[in-house]
Length: 213
Image 1 (cartoon, rainbow, N blue to C red):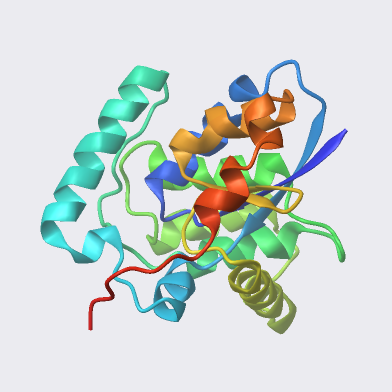
Image 2 (cartoon, one colour):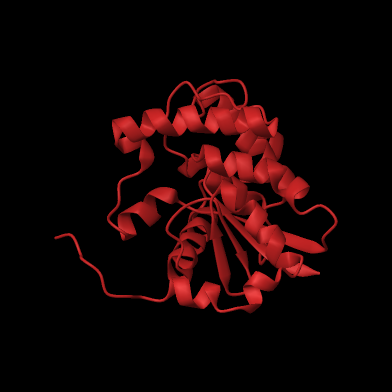
């Protein structure tokens, strides 16, 4: 059974699409997924990069494209009433539900992602957050120091691993970014000979080029 890491932030519509289609994309394969919520904003800050929603033409394109992709994939996707929003409380909640040394369950992650991407409501509305917490962790404190630290640790580990965006799927030492990488992940797990050649290392190696200053 192959171990897979799935890093995501509930703020990302692409993460929702990839999460929903992961089982279908990997149908017939033997694998186990560790779902790892991280802070996309921290990845952007580390690489000094703006998010798609911070560049207006890119924001407009992003939501047009994700709705097209959702339509093609047969996934319900409703843009939240406010976006971008602060996803920290949601990601802390996910980590608060996980036992020590474990990652959040698929059920927990699905419930949180559906909270954001189904229905078009405000993901940060206090009454909705309270109901979500009651559903997932009625006796736990997602604002505890432990939950905060687990999210920080997961994000720091992701940056150290080389993540620059979400969703990212990790298989052994390889990282695959984006919803459209699911097919590539499946090909690797099915033993596609492409991965036995030099393509991966050759194309990922640094090379000379003009740098913008």
